[in-house]
Image 1 (cartoon, helix red, strand yellow):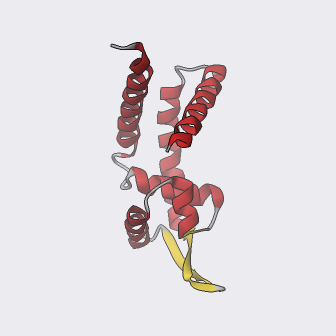
Image 2 (image 1 turned 45 degrees about the vertical axis):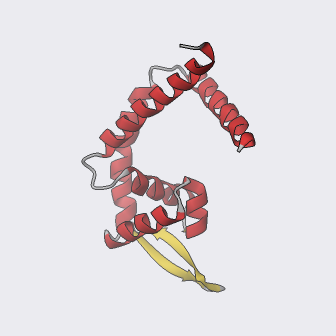
Length: 142
């Protein structure tokens, strides 16, 4: 294996493994990764417009429309029109959505934390720094 590609292959393998773990952690919760991610953003940031939510979680517009439709049907969110511009929707977690998110989050966080516990605090901070650095450099190319 060429050394230049080794880091990329390791990164992809780690991503695939962690993605499987995330899906496994959410498997019996009744929500998928995109739904969880949207709910997490709303829980942390509060009410957001659809575009702010898309920008926050990096889910494409067409997928976000579907995710919001599902969350709305489950009564986890409410959508209100913005007073100053009726074309813009404000998305908010409902009381039920907040309750469900908190229940899922506790178990999910604990499970995901167990994966990252292989790293000490300094190593985890270094990983975050290096991934951000790599992401920014890659973003400069595209």
